[in-house]
Length: 600
Image (cartoon, rainbow, N blue to C red; front, side, top):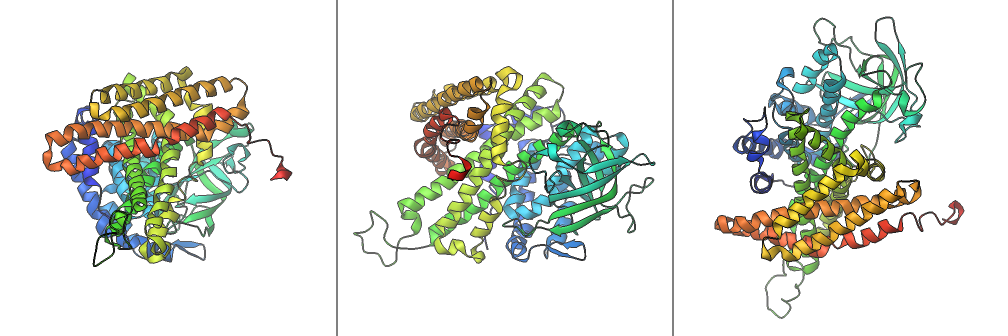
């Protein structure tokens, strides 16, 4: 069974030395009490919960899976007790507004805790994670009555939330959505239709589940312009008390749960709405806007999940490589030794471990930096700073979701490989982590769709000014690192990659004027190039911080030397991928569309 030690030291380094949490987030209005010391204490508590409660149920929960019989879903053994303790300890309410019973902490703190949760059990984190999307959608678009009814319960975790978008004939193309919403005489609506792939769609963890459902009104225009969002509870709360009674079931039934490759302890349900009562959120036919409040929150959550599952895979691959002995490592072949060498002494195993280390620490830095943008947006939503943070998050969200989730699959795959044949058997847990990670490029909008969103919408935000401002910030990182002679070789590599990204962006902007085919053909390679450049920027910042840190903190020299060595590996062995990604972008759709369907 995998073990886990929360990366507390890594996060302190990022918050204290790299991103200056106390000088930024802790100075924002409303977050003054969220000092670095307070945040680290919270993370210490989360680490204990994950280590003692979640890690022990993760692998057994994957083996047992969820149970479905007589229309009822049961989670694996131990999950109900773990969820009750999770709520008792106040973890669901960290970043929610005190007005609704929350603790009012910065969103970044909740996301860091969510990383630990995903390391302990991705499946467990699914149940609470989607509630945040429901909370934010109702908070942003719901009436005062809906807020009063649902937000306190979502905040304290006594109810969970879902997003009900996908239908059998309407996956990523919401214009084909067929679920209907008919007004009734009580001022609510009757929702009829079937939704599939609903994470946490049914379970036994809470007394109620709050479904957020996309449906069409009778007079709705066609396509995505005719979609409205509704809150449809599993059980209808009493209008006076807000509580649910055993006989208050809504007309929502579970048709099945999916038998999945991974996240098996998370119930993924088929839900049938058979004239279920629902209440509108937002404006008629304004469901797409309200939905994106949920989706953007969830996509950043997917990035954080990806880091969590990657971290535990890396930790266990590293521990195994240090203890597993096999053969004679190159350079040791002439020595007489009583035992074989540890496999960490073999160069190819080092390559795998360094790749895992560099990617894990890089993707964590990417999400933490972006999470602090969430802090700025939450603190001052209507200010110039808050609006700038919102715009940059809009640009970066498809990159965070896709690039980081692709890295998670690569990292967990390497985790299996380092273990050799033992990685392929269930008991080590490594194949389980890989199977869990394989979902993250798929849900909340597949990575191919995220790439299309980036090239067709996001790089053109505010006539390109948002992207240009982000590129200018990368130039500032390069300029700062250039002051350290020992980093010049890293700076040079990053400067080349940034120029590739600028040239690729110019090509995509040119193609946006009527050349949709080349634009679409280049999208995935462009997103990968963007992610490589973004990771280069955070590695430059980490290398710069560690260059100063090893002089200031000689007792932490090995930590800082490890950071600088990892940065060097990234720029010499991984960032060169940006060269051929750039070449692929410049090909557009050439060769992609040359074969006819019959020629495949």
